[in-house]
Image (spheres, one colour):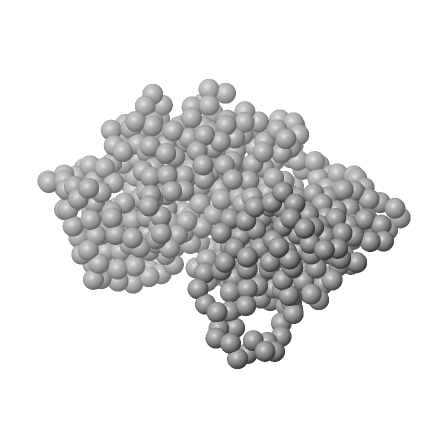
Amino acid sequence: MGNRRRAPERGRTKPAVIGGMIAVVVGGAGFGVYALYGGGAAADDSNSASDAKPVKKGPLSATEVKSTATAFLTAWQSGDVTTAAAATNDTAAARTLLTGYGKEAYIKNVTLTAKKRSGDAVPFSVKGTVAYKGGLTKPLAYESELTVVRRAKDGKPLVDWHSAVVHPDLKDGDKLVTGEAGTPPVKALDRDGGELTTAKYPSLGTVLDGLREKFGKTAGGKAGIELRVIRAEAKSKDAEGSARTASDETPDKTLVELSKGTPGTVRTTLSPGLQATAEQQVAKKAKSSAVVIRPSTGEILAVANAGHGFNTAFQGSLAPGSTMKIITASLLIDKGLASTNKEHPCPKFSTYGGWKFQNDDKFEIKDGTFKASFARSCNTAFISQAKELSDDDLTKQAQQVFGLGMDNWAIGVPSFDGSVPVQSQAQMAASLIGQGGVRMNPLNMASVVATAKTGTFHQPYLVAPTVDKRTLAKASRSLSADTQAQLKELLQYTAAAGTAAEAMAGLGPDFGAKTGSAEVDGQKKPNGWFTAWKGDLASAGVVQQGGHGGETAGPIVAALLKAGSAS
């Protein structure tokens, strides 16, 4: 992409010093507290004589951070919810969740151990026992972290309250509950009948949780007794302030299984060989995600994320950069504003709506064709056409031809279906090159290149619609024969001789690809994107903060297409 940044892409003993850690030990009728931080901090919220003193400002001292953490952890560990909550900057929310920790989650005998602070943050470990009715018990252990902040009105240091302080899997509004699971477990199978587990495929955790949430009650299983994260029911908002719908939500999550349920069985479309390759490939690049689908049917054959806490591949909402030019090119061809082998402007700069756009390294192509501009990913070749378009043209093309942004995909687990909002002026122009308000993920972009390959949108799916009689989304029209032929030629040329050529070497001739890099405010490097097809396989990947897509996401996608073609 160009250099302009546009896209904004969860009984007390006397304290003593012991080896640099807080150790809070509870057992039997009594407990002991051993505090590294030189004594506990008062957890009350009163102002008394301090009202006359100047409000303390500026960075927190090490003593303030340590003593505040000590006070909070000591009170929580001892079961003094009122004092613990008063040591935070959201007393009501903290009291509710900490009360539920014992009364709804049935977590007893808690031991908290603070570790070496890092600035204003204090990591700590939690050990306890989940003790449910009828003598069911299981140990519980995990790591968490708190951050101390200074309250503006009086300068008092307090724990910055978020539900994640109690457990890292909690988002604000979520809660911990132990009891009969709301949904029975499921045994997820790949397309060949093999069981899908996180031990075998580490990044499938969120997918398996989603399958249970969707199919647990209908797959024939029986629920067990579990400690689970129960997600908030109220709609939340994403990073851009847009309301998230039920399909965007993260499913409930099992933390401890006290008694086993009987799982039902759900068969997916995942290919064991491709899934294994996807796991291996994303493990090579931090913050990478990838998807493989079958263009002729929409079956999802693989999905993997380097980070296992959030399914960026299915639920990510990121500016797609120049991979969006696939959709824009189809629009320009449809409207007669561009043609593969006709001359097309690619100047160093192009201005629209008060913004001056440029190409990477300010290159230009003199007397070049639209194919040359597409293959080299010339931004100005697309920006120069903004004046010929209506504000909603790109939105309509994305929805009507590529099936995006309608919030109606039903793939079998939570997913984000892409967003191409109607925009005007400079933001509309930026959308043409995958910036502005456009948001996608690897699943969306694999579908885009698959539609370019076949000419018709086939909604991706992980579980066959016949399993639960759900209706797959459809696009209102297909690409015209002429537009599809030109679009395929653009993608094939890019894979053979353009910015995607190095990654796609040796995979032709039935192939096509597009690279992209999306600038994000606050990032030194852009997000690198790559989407491609080979035969009846389509794949897309992103490496966040990776740099140019051909160098970062390209090798991941190419390896997946090569593995799929060989199997």
